[in-house]
Image 1 (cartoon, rainbow, N blue to C red):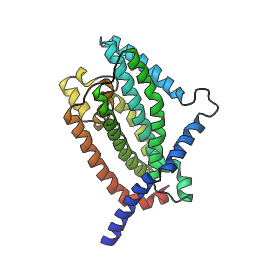
Image 2 (cartoon, one colour; image 1 turned 180 degrees about the vertical axis):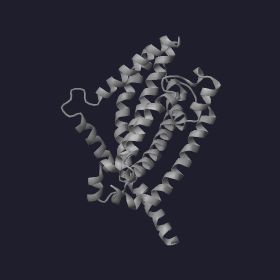
Image 3 (cartoon, rainbow, N blue to C red; image 1 turned 120 degrees about the vertical axis):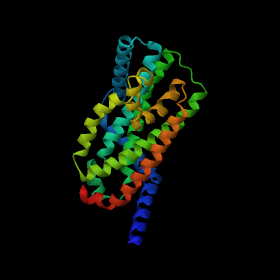
Image 4 (cartoon, rainbow, N blue to C red; image 1 turned 30 degrees about the horizontal axis):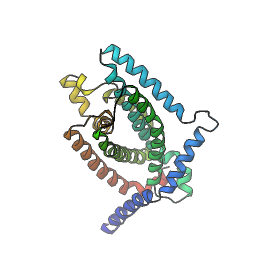
Length: 268
C-alpha cells in the first residue's frame, strides 16, 4: 500500500513537471485555438478587447455618477479590475471543462493531464494580453504614470496564475466525475462578481460588508494582481493571505490529483 501511494505521488508530480516542461504543446495549441476561434474575423480577439472596453467605460461612468466618486479614480480602477476578473472567470470556467472538452484527445494521445490545464491558462493569458490594452489606453488618458510599484506587477500576476491554476485543476478533476459542476461554477460566478471588489472598492464598504468580502479568497488574488497597475501597494496582510491561499490550495490540489489522476480517463 505504501509503495502504491508513493508511486501515485511520484506519477502525479511527474505529470505536473512534464506538463509544464513540454510547453511547446500547450503553447502551439493555445495560440492555434485563439486563431481558429476568430478565423475570418476582421478584428479577431480584439472583439473581446472592445467588449471589455465598452463594459468598463459604461460601468465606470455609471458608478462614478451613482456613488459620486472621482471618475479619474473610478474608471481606471474598473478597467484593470474587469480585465483581471475576465481572466479569472474565463480560466476557471474553462478549467472546469478542460478534461471533459478534450476527452477525445485524452483517450487517444498519452499526455500529462496538467498539459490541458496549462492550455486553458495560456489561451486566456493571450486574451488577457489583448484586453490589457483597455487599461493602457485609460491609463494614458488619465495620466497614470508607471512608478516603482510596477515592479510588483510580475509577482502579482504570478500569484494570480498560481491560484487560478490550482482552482482549475481541482474543478477539472471534480467535473470529470460530476458533470453538473461546470454549470454550478458558471452560475456561482454571477454571484462572486458582486462578492468580489470588481466594480467597487473595499473602502466604500461598511465594516460588516467589508468582512464578508475579505473572506472571499478571490478578493485577495484580484487585489495583488490589480493594485500595482494603479500605483498602489497592496497591504502586507493581503500578500501573505494570497501566498497562504496558494500554498494551501496547491497542497489540496496535489492531494486530489494524486488520488484521482489515474481515474480521469475512465470518468470522461
